[in-house]
Image 1 (cartoon, helix red, strand yellow):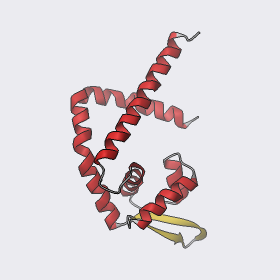
Image 2 (cartoon, rainbow, N blue to C red):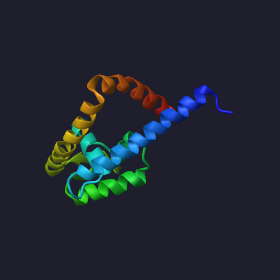
Image 3 (cartoon, rainbow, N blue to C red):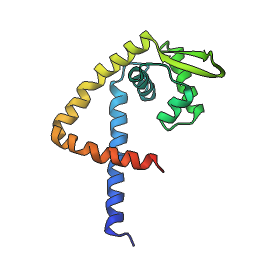
Length: 146
């Protein structure tokens, strides 16, 4: 028989999963044509990284397999949004960087999604959104340790 703590955990994670699905669907609708949420996520990460990353580093960042990241990077390279080059110090590795057109695509995506995200935060209330961040970060940190 579930305890009150079990019921809290189920309710909490049910809400998180539902919010995740709704957020992904809402973001996918407003992203620029041809851009998937996974593309935006990688471009955004590379834009903030300020340098090159290996596919393995990116896979770890997004908790994906190397194969899944390789697939996404192949699509991004085909679109001209990333540059992938050999690592001159270790021929077994590759290095990925965001291209100027990738940065422009990322910026266009941010411009497209920001009004929707801002509207949601405004409707919920900035204080409530700010108060949720430490809890969500603590949950993420704990889940990363699993």
